[in-house]
Image (cartoon, rainbow, N blue to C red; front, side):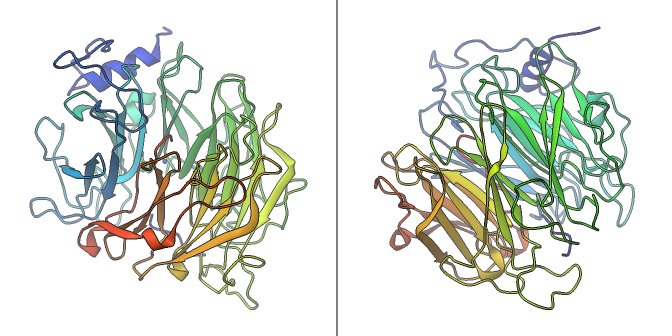
Length: 487
């Protein structure tokens, strides 16, 4: 499969709050604990950047031209899914400046990092400060603080803020947010896939300075190769139901036994425990093969409504069609591992492909290249949306309380090209059922599918409601990354 274009002790949560509140790392301010403007408090609604009680959407265009600088990148904020505001490195108060090839928006994550009930936004700028033509970037992460007046620029983070030397590591190529310590606010998880074989930065954990986890960290204890891309894909979820999230770190090029087979490592940063998952793990259906890219996409949700997070893992390089060539795009599969009291339990895992679902597997479909979970039918358990960008399609599986995901009434929605299905995000709907945003970054187009309330084994999404609601030039890769409601 080809590489896809596509993450003395102090209270580190206070450091992150200070970074968010300050436009410069040198001028840290205390965290805000109440209303910022006009006496209006923030809503606490996930992804609500302006405190009006409605979730907002951030959409990255990392190849956008900014003031003549090609591929400098931009992020469009759709307040209330309607009003557009554009963020760039040349924006008022934003540290730094837009430069050619920075790829501002190479990753996005939203969470309440400072505990003020306003959603904050982290933007990856993975190619910042490239050493020369063709070189990887050192990378930075630009923070924006939510407030009743909308997003405000915060600080810029780089490897030095996590105690590492700055180098061509693509710091910020992946991002995720989650409450890793159970204190009620979110921590920021940063992918550094070019740091040796890769790394995962943790910023904001109570009682610890920001730090980096690698495959060679003592409690992870894995072999590291320079091509593994550990941390290039990230997700968080509370897989054991203890009130604290764990990190799932994808290494889609990891060579455990086979070249580029891929792996996912679940990191419990509080207990300092790591569990590696591959297609050769006990009870996981399938087997590891070269260039499968296991872990190229991740999503967490509660597919069986048991109160514990479940993990969906994309394997877009999996070959089902005969005579696949090495490193070509595959038909693709998705592996789902369910949460349990002791964490993810492979004995209850399952594998999904278009064999047995609507549609059929084809060479280069890349089934599983993008994933998103959401309660699209409003019945209390999550459904799973699977991007099939080689087919310009999205497959949706319903969740059930009786056993999790089911192929019953599975839904296949096709789009009009442009790698439709290359990025996905669940968003609030008009009623209990969530909607699904589907990106076609090759065309610079976002499509909204609305959900509807229908209990049981029904995906909930209605293809008849599909409507384009935001567009940009196709060469900007608009929609390359989208924030997810509740992520």
